[in-house]
Length: 204
Image (cartoon, rainbow, N blue to C red; front, side, top):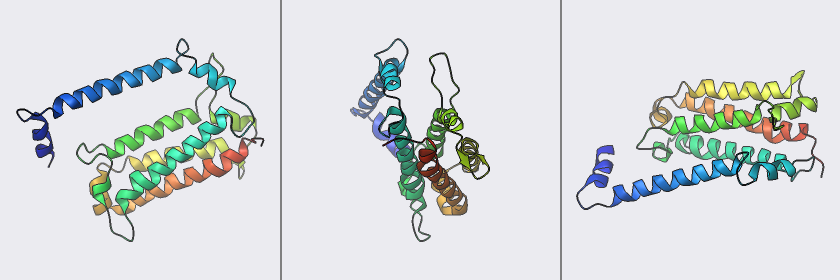
Protein backbone atom coordinates (compact mmCIF):
# COMPACT_ATOMS: atom_id res chain seq x y z
CA UNK A 1 0.00 0.00 0.00
CA UNK A 2 2.78 2.44 0.91
CA UNK A 3 4.53 1.73 -2.40
CA UNK A 4 1.34 2.61 -4.29
CA UNK A 5 1.04 5.91 -2.42
CA UNK A 6 4.68 6.81 -3.11
CA UNK A 7 4.36 5.91 -6.78
CA UNK A 8 1.44 8.33 -7.20
CA UNK A 9 3.72 11.14 -6.02
CA UNK A 10 6.64 10.11 -8.21
CA UNK A 11 4.78 9.24 -11.40
CA UNK A 12 5.58 11.19 -14.57
CA UNK A 13 3.41 14.28 -14.91
CA UNK A 14 2.21 14.15 -11.31
CA UNK A 15 2.30 17.44 -9.43
CA UNK A 16 1.62 15.84 -6.07
CA UNK A 17 5.29 15.78 -5.10
CA UNK A 18 5.71 19.49 -5.85
CA UNK A 19 2.51 20.26 -3.97
CA UNK A 20 3.70 18.26 -0.96
CA UNK A 21 7.08 20.04 -0.93
CA UNK A 22 5.30 23.40 -1.09
CA UNK A 23 3.10 22.40 1.86
CA UNK A 24 6.18 21.36 3.86
CA UNK A 25 7.93 24.66 3.16
CA UNK A 26 4.83 26.59 4.20
CA UNK A 27 4.50 24.54 7.38
CA UNK A 28 8.13 25.26 8.28
CA UNK A 29 7.57 28.98 7.64
CA UNK A 30 4.52 28.96 9.91
CA UNK A 31 6.34 27.12 12.70
CA UNK A 32 9.38 29.43 12.45
CA UNK A 33 7.10 32.48 12.53
CA UNK A 34 5.22 31.19 15.58
CA UNK A 35 8.46 30.39 17.38
CA UNK A 36 9.73 33.91 16.67
CA UNK A 37 6.50 35.50 17.94
CA UNK A 38 6.89 33.62 21.24
CA UNK A 39 10.59 34.48 21.62
CA UNK A 40 11.83 37.28 23.88
CA UNK A 41 12.70 39.42 20.86
CA UNK A 42 9.62 38.48 18.88
CA UNK A 43 6.16 39.90 18.42
CA UNK A 44 5.13 40.19 22.05
CA UNK A 45 3.20 36.93 22.51
CA UNK A 46 5.23 36.13 25.62
CA UNK A 47 4.67 39.55 27.16
CA UNK A 48 0.94 39.38 26.40
CA UNK A 49 0.72 35.95 28.01
CA UNK A 50 2.49 37.13 31.16
CA UNK A 51 0.39 40.29 31.34
CA UNK A 52 -2.80 38.20 31.19
CA UNK A 53 -1.72 35.92 34.04
CA UNK A 54 -3.77 36.18 37.19
CA UNK A 55 -6.15 34.40 39.57
CA UNK A 56 -9.14 34.62 37.22
CA UNK A 57 -10.47 31.50 35.52
CA UNK A 58 -10.16 33.18 32.09
CA UNK A 59 -6.54 34.24 32.65
CA UNK A 60 -3.77 32.97 30.38
CA UNK A 61 -2.98 30.24 32.93
CA UNK A 62 -6.61 29.13 33.02
CA UNK A 63 -6.85 29.04 29.23
CA UNK A 64 -3.60 27.08 28.99
CA UNK A 65 -4.91 24.54 31.52
CA UNK A 66 -8.13 24.16 29.52
CA UNK A 67 -6.13 23.61 26.33
CA UNK A 68 -4.11 20.85 28.01
CA UNK A 69 -7.34 19.14 29.06
CA UNK A 70 -8.77 19.50 25.55
CA UNK A 71 -5.60 18.09 23.96
CA UNK A 72 -5.56 15.13 26.35
CA UNK A 73 -9.19 14.43 25.51
CA UNK A 74 -8.44 14.40 21.77
CA UNK A 75 -5.42 12.12 22.24
CA UNK A 76 -7.43 9.72 24.39
CA UNK A 77 -10.67 9.63 22.43
CA UNK A 78 -9.54 10.17 18.83
CA UNK A 79 -5.93 9.10 18.46
CA UNK A 80 -5.96 6.16 20.91
CA UNK A 81 -9.64 5.39 21.43
CA UNK A 82 -10.56 5.68 17.76
CA UNK A 83 -8.24 2.88 16.55
CA UNK A 84 -8.98 0.87 19.70
CA UNK A 85 -12.63 0.76 18.67
CA UNK A 86 -15.62 -0.35 20.70
CA UNK A 87 -16.99 -3.66 21.95
CA UNK A 88 -13.81 -5.49 21.04
CA UNK A 89 -13.94 -4.37 17.40
CA UNK A 90 -10.66 -2.58 16.58
CA UNK A 91 -10.44 0.15 13.94
CA UNK A 92 -6.77 0.13 12.86
CA UNK A 93 -7.76 2.17 9.80
CA UNK A 94 -8.28 5.15 12.13
CA UNK A 95 -4.66 5.50 13.25
CA UNK A 96 -3.22 8.95 12.77
CA UNK A 97 -0.17 7.91 10.75
CA UNK A 98 -1.46 5.00 8.67
CA UNK A 99 1.34 5.02 6.08
CA UNK A 100 4.21 6.41 8.13
CA UNK A 101 3.72 4.25 11.21
CA UNK A 102 4.42 7.23 13.47
CA UNK A 103 1.14 7.35 15.40
CA UNK A 104 2.64 6.45 18.77
CA UNK A 105 5.62 8.77 18.23
CA UNK A 106 3.26 11.68 17.53
CA UNK A 107 1.29 10.98 20.70
CA UNK A 108 4.50 10.63 22.72
CA UNK A 109 5.91 13.94 21.41
CA UNK A 110 2.73 15.82 22.30
CA UNK A 111 2.58 14.33 25.78
CA UNK A 112 6.23 15.23 26.42
CA UNK A 113 5.46 18.80 25.34
CA UNK A 114 2.60 18.97 27.84
CA UNK A 115 4.81 17.45 30.52
CA UNK A 116 7.40 20.18 29.94
CA UNK A 117 4.72 22.86 30.22
CA UNK A 118 3.54 21.33 33.47
CA UNK A 119 6.97 20.95 35.06
CA UNK A 120 8.83 23.86 33.50
CA UNK A 121 11.40 25.24 35.99
CA UNK A 122 11.53 28.95 36.64
CA UNK A 123 13.92 30.99 34.52
CA UNK A 124 15.22 34.52 34.09
CA UNK A 125 11.93 35.85 32.71
CA UNK A 126 9.96 34.54 35.69
CA UNK A 127 8.04 31.76 33.94
CA UNK A 128 7.15 28.72 36.01
CA UNK A 129 5.31 25.48 35.33
CA UNK A 130 1.99 24.36 36.77
CA UNK A 131 3.91 22.22 39.27
CA UNK A 132 5.38 25.37 40.85
CA UNK A 133 1.94 27.00 41.03
CA UNK A 134 0.43 23.89 42.66
CA UNK A 135 3.23 23.61 45.20
CA UNK A 136 2.89 27.29 46.00
CA UNK A 137 -0.85 26.69 46.64
CA UNK A 138 0.02 23.61 48.76
CA UNK A 139 -2.27 21.47 46.56
CA UNK A 140 -2.50 17.86 47.75
CA UNK A 141 -3.54 14.52 46.30
CA UNK A 142 -4.18 12.43 49.37
CA UNK A 143 -1.07 12.81 51.52
CA UNK A 144 1.20 13.62 48.56
CA UNK A 145 1.78 16.77 46.61
CA UNK A 146 -0.62 17.03 43.68
CA UNK A 147 2.27 18.10 41.44
CA UNK A 148 4.07 14.82 42.19
CA UNK A 149 0.93 12.78 41.43
CA UNK A 150 0.49 14.48 38.06
CA UNK A 151 4.17 14.11 37.19
CA UNK A 152 4.01 10.41 38.12
CA UNK A 153 1.01 9.98 35.84
CA UNK A 154 2.86 11.53 32.90
CA UNK A 155 5.67 9.06 33.58
CA UNK A 156 3.24 6.13 33.75
CA UNK A 157 1.77 7.01 30.35
CA UNK A 158 5.17 7.33 28.70
CA UNK A 159 6.30 3.98 30.13
CA UNK A 160 3.17 2.30 28.74
CA UNK A 161 3.60 4.02 25.37
CA UNK A 162 7.12 2.62 25.11
CA UNK A 163 5.62 -0.88 25.09
CA UNK A 164 3.75 -0.11 21.86
CA UNK A 165 5.72 -0.01 18.64
CA UNK A 166 3.00 -0.01 15.98
CA UNK A 167 -0.44 1.19 17.11
CA UNK A 168 -2.13 -0.11 13.97
CA UNK A 169 -0.99 -3.66 14.77
CA UNK A 170 -1.31 -3.52 18.54
CA UNK A 171 -5.01 -2.56 18.59
CA UNK A 172 -5.59 -5.91 16.85
CA UNK A 173 -2.87 -8.14 18.32
CA UNK A 174 -2.52 -6.74 21.83
CA UNK A 175 -5.43 -4.41 22.64
CA UNK A 176 -4.82 -4.74 26.41
CA UNK A 177 -1.63 -2.68 26.11
CA UNK A 178 -3.51 0.02 24.22
CA UNK A 179 -6.32 -0.03 26.79
CA UNK A 180 -3.70 0.49 29.51
CA UNK A 181 -2.49 3.64 27.72
CA UNK A 182 -6.06 4.85 27.25
CA UNK A 183 -6.87 4.40 30.95
CA UNK A 184 -3.62 6.05 32.06
CA UNK A 185 -4.33 9.10 29.89
CA UNK A 186 -7.87 9.18 31.26
CA UNK A 187 -6.51 9.32 34.81
CA UNK A 188 -4.15 12.16 33.88
CA UNK A 189 -7.01 14.04 32.28
CA UNK A 190 -9.06 13.76 35.46
CA UNK A 191 -6.12 14.85 37.62
CA UNK A 192 -5.65 17.99 35.55
CA UNK A 193 -9.29 18.73 34.75
CA UNK A 194 -10.50 18.35 38.32
CA UNK A 195 -7.70 18.28 40.90
CA UNK A 196 -5.29 20.71 39.22
CA UNK A 197 -7.96 23.23 38.27
CA UNK A 198 -9.33 23.18 41.83
CA UNK A 199 -5.82 23.27 43.29
CA UNK A 200 -4.96 26.45 41.40
CA UNK A 201 -7.71 28.28 43.34
CA UNK A 202 -9.00 30.36 40.43
CA UNK A 203 -11.39 33.16 41.28
CA UNK A 204 -14.64 33.66 39.35
